[in-house]
Length: 200
Image 1 (cartoon, one colour):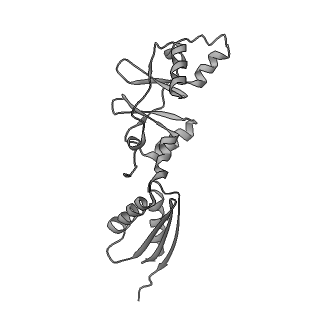
Image 2: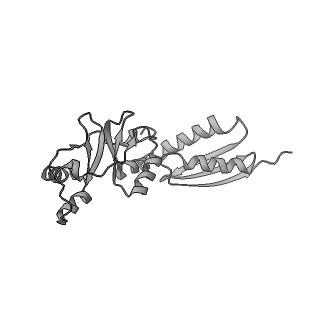
Image 3: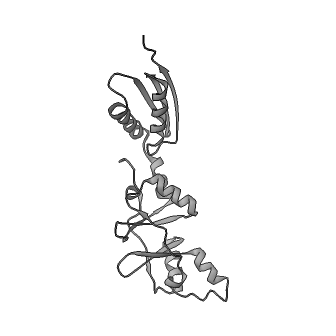
């Protein structure tokens, strides 16, 4: 499994969308057929202009007199919350959590829709094999973080849980290694037990 870093790495490329003029019944049918809870609404140019969700449709079902919307353009929530395809997975997860969103339209630099990312898509990072996580950590530690020969760090990964051990020149480096390990996609938790080398 490749390193999963960005939304583009995990998003679903096949996207079901509707245009502003899509009628109420067609929206309901599309949601039922594709088993999704929200649909991006796009302009004629393919840009995301809003999102129509089950919550929007239920306002209509409640029979509110003031809610006379019958098309996607009238029903949709604006502005649409979108995420760039090159956004980090952690950033997309925070955006979803803050907005209590289940899915986000993914857009390119011009605002055209290129995919959709769901909560389940973002959780794919936790399916990374332990050996992939361990290999990435070893590469980070040995090639970028530790000057050659200045420390000995053992990396063990089981079920996404990282255990670091070994000898470091100073305790602060151990803290840095833990923080770096926490940022590697697929890592569930990190523990460390380092001994510090005391200069003679």
